[in-house]
Image (spheres, rainbow, N blue to C red):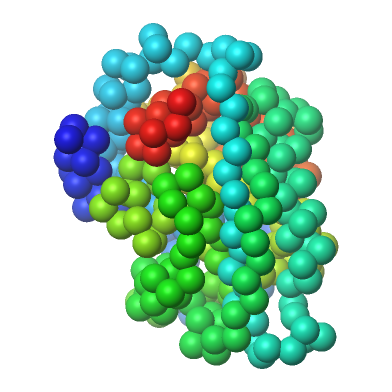
Length: 322
């Protein structure tokens, strides 16, 4: 009962967190002032990429999660002997038409995507190993023009998920289509992906999962974001992680992870800004190599021990997975 009440309390407090990445920004030596708010109308171009539109919680809601995490932490101390869990992944690929030769996302790319997920979550490319692995559940090619381009929170997103979602609370559904900002934001560009958090499942189970831009699967054509690591990032949200920059330098409640240094602003772009320190008053350099940041795919290689513990907390409390 407590779990359901918590979900209802948190859900209305979701805030949009979308950050622009301009393909014209090539400076890798200095911090950039990228604001979480959309840029002014009339200044964006079709080259703009909004890296992730997963919605962050405000500080009061994060505090609720932090208090629960503190209560459960003694039972969830990180251990290499933690029970493993395997999640079936179902890909729903929205195509332009039904012909196989016109598929923009070949099945082979999705098989490779599963391998990318497993390498990242097993720690084989760096950082801490998590107890989570992923298997191919299925690939569903769908010819539905009205779902070919969607915006987060749109009627089309809701209809698509209600119609296509399969499995249960332990199933990761990934919807692959073109994603653009809502027209109400008055900006042009592309969103690379967005996801739901585990604490929203009980209230909106049909919305659970990840929506991924078809141009960021392995081997696609978006420079710096075409190796499959965008889905690693979005799956981190599905497992309960916030962005590393959540809360910035000043907020007493940040991403709730003790071993990810504070970060003032997101770091999107086609670069890997070594030794960046956007919060000089706080310990540590920016976590540019963390999967939950906004540097390029090749730069993001790791989860931390604290993030693994926080994933386990979310999976136990909100998905019932030990």
